[in-house]
Amino acid sequence: MSEAQEKDNFWLYIGLAVVLAAGAVLMVKNAEHDKYATAAKNIAEDSSNSAYRSDVLHKNGLAK
Image 1 (cartoon, rainbow, N blue to C red):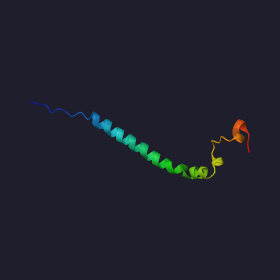
Image 2: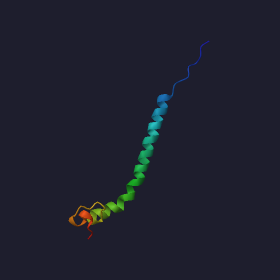
Image 3: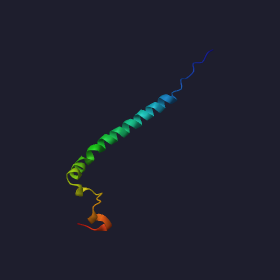
Image 4: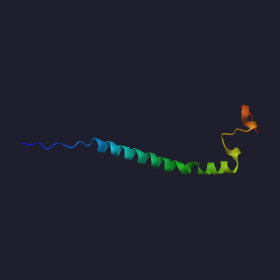
């Protein structure tokens, strides 16, 4: 009698997991991309709209 050997699907499962993880990362990245488009446009127009100001008045906690 010859027994049929069961095929090992380990690498198939690993490949599938990698593809699913990459797809999830890309979906989240694309969803978050448009989230900051308005802020990027406003900062491009006037850099004082940025939270990361480095001008002289904002050093040492001074406000305009």
